[in-house]
Image 1 (tube, rainbow, N blue to C red):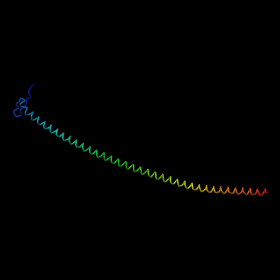
Image 2 (cartoon, helix red, strand yellow):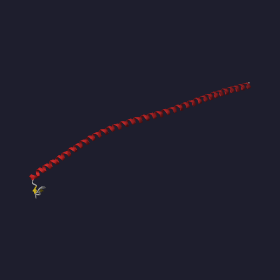
Image 3 (cartoon, helix red, strand yellow):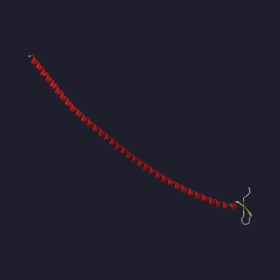
Image 4 (tube, one colour):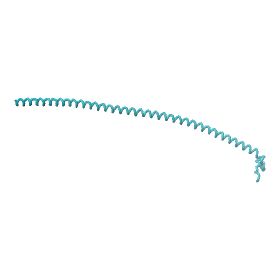
Length: 147
C-alpha cells in the first residue's frame, strides 16, 4: 500500500505522510473531536436533566390537577345529593299535605254521613214509636169493640 502524500503549499514538493508526521495531526484532531464529543454529551446531559425536571413539574401539576378535579367532583356530588334531598323533602311535604287534606275532607264526609245517619235513626225510631202507638191504639180500639 502506498503512503499518502502531502503537497507543500510553498514549494509544491510532495512529502510522504508518515506516522511520525501524522501523529501530531491525528492527536490534535482526536483531541478536538473528543472535546466536541464531551461538549455534546454535556449538552445532552443538561437537556436530559432539564427534561427530568420538566417531567417532575408536569407530574406535580397533574397530581394537583387530579386533586382539584377530585375535590370539585366531590363538591358537585354533595351539591347534587343536597338538591335531591331537598327535592325529595318538598315532594314528601306536598304528598303529606295532600293526604292531610284528603283525610280532612273524608272526616267532614264521615261527620256529615254520621249526622244524616243519626237523623235517619231518629226518624226510624220515631216511626217505630208511632207504629207501636198505632198498634196500641188499634188494639185498644179492638178491645173496646170486643167488649
